[in-house]
Length: 221
Image 1: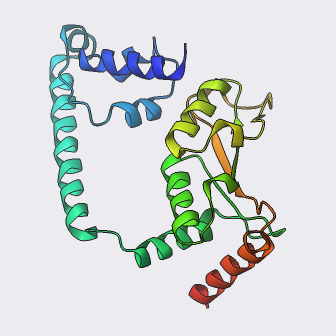
Image 2 (image 1 turned 90 degrees about the horizontal axis):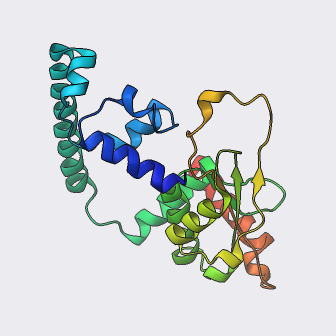
């Protein structure tokens, strides 16, 4: 079953009032992944769930879930108030902070690695708006696991980042036999290694990498 179909099945079951334990019988992912997928969906236990885990426990779970949704909504409203509009200066520092944590520091390679597509998309925005690169200079290689559907993952990252599939390198599949079974579903779309190529312009090759490192030295001094 493709990942999007798997996720939709989990969502449908949750909306029908089933517990995570029940859903994992039909959706082969970890409960932490279910929590990411379903955490914002209102939960009203159905008859099966109540009979399985008990009325009091089901009611308690529903109440806790409602409290969680209220807390998440409050945090969202507060974040909008605190952050407001993001200026170009904000973007400069935010992108630099991401690079400090997730960017390549060696071998003159300008690269950001992350499993969160939002981080990669924001990094692309930073490279384009702050560093002046073009979308054509971006290359992405996915690091996947045997339970990932490679074509689905490539399409997902391409759609999310707006980087054409033609600019994706061949994916690397981690087939280590000692991977724990409970790791399945943890990285549904794998990890993206997004790098910048110069396309013949030295300002976006070694010089860009050294400039970024100089920015990092300045803020960390």
